[in-house]
Amino acid sequence: MRQTGAEKTPPYVIVVAAIAAIAGILFGFDTGVISGAILFLQTEFQLSAAMNGVVVSAVLIGALLGAGFSGLFVDIFGRRRLLIVVACIFIVGTVGSALAQSLAMLITTRIIVGVAIGISSFTVPLYISEISPPKYRGMLVTFNQLAITIGILSSYGIDYIFTPSESWRLMFTMGVIPAVILLIGMIFLPESPRWMVLRGWVDKARETLAKVRCNSNIDQEIAEIHASIHQEQRADWRLIFQRWLRPAVWIGLGLAFFQQATGINTIIYYAPTIFKLAGFSSNTVAILATAGVGTANVLFTIVALPLIDRWGRRPLLLTGLTAMIISLTIMGFSFHSTAHSDLLGWLTLGSMVLYIAGFAISLGPIMWLIIAEVFPLEIRGFGTSAMVAASWLFNALVALSFLTLIDTLGAGNTFWLFGLISLLGWVFVRYYIPETKGVSLEHIEDNLRAGKSARQLADS
Ligand code: BGC
Image (cartoon, rainbow, N blue to C red):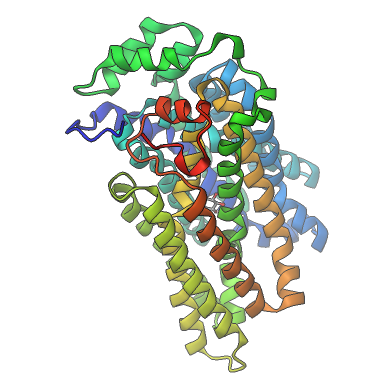
């Protein structure tokens, strides 16, 4: 059942995946930009400590709402149409936050941006996975994660450029550019052929498949998609509680939990604070070290691109998690050391880069990918949206509790705690995660319906 032939990736499907992935740039940019802007927002709006937290986490709250409430829309209105609406929401939210005259307007517009991030965060992987040939699905869906990392890195760059002039409005405004490109691009992209078959638009689905496939049997693919549709079970969120769907739910929730609870965003959001804690005395070095972490994130995601379909999801997850466990253990030790010096700072930087490399080849891209692969067509939108909403919830919980954890447990123990969670993540992957490399979405669905366990969902 695994696709192993010599089928080439048609250039058109690469273009489609790359355009849809622009939403990932917005995801990364809009979550990252606040770290620089907040310094000036504090003075402009005279933020109390509590309000500071609200402004920073407004995007996370919006993302949780966006991902949580739009699952049925993606099944009812289609992936493409929803992404067009998302691009418009991005534009409205971004322009609004750049023009905000009051704290209430700032928070509301940042929540609106968050809603767009939340919806696109699950819709894009879903759309790309449905349009891709199984043999390249991993790489093409990972374009989205690559775009997220590029977005985060460019937000650091934009913050750096506009910091001397204290122009937080311009920092936000830059987000309009990718949003407009996404809007124009999505107008020209085709709808997901799988969703079109679900709606009964078989001829249009065939036309799209002909454009996004080389040498493959399109009629057979249509027949397989057809066979996976069970008319008596149209988009209904209650389906998710059915027993046969449990393996997909456990896989999704587990990956969403481990992607966030292993601490990635404590590094992404708080890197300069961590470097200062670790002993770097100068602000500039701490900021440059942060840019180094952002660059490593992009580079190692590029390393992962060709490996995801060649080595497979499981070997990458297990290798990446091992690197994360090792680096978190070292980070714990370096924070336990009483000596504070630049040397310690460099040791922390080295272990952070190892950690980021581990994340970028494993949980970073593969969480989104596998969540978009394991749900059956009729409930794919709702299923992925629920799992991704859970991931936004875990994201917010970790971000909100991190500084308290550092205060109560100390930095060393906090990183050891993340190390322990990574170890549990390794065990979870070892026993629960199926190898979906090269397997068609319909075959995974057949296995689910046949009652196979999580680990066996992609077996032939
Ligand atoms: C995660 C984000 C994280 C980013 C870092 C994404 O996959 O969901 O929470 O900030 O990766 O690259």
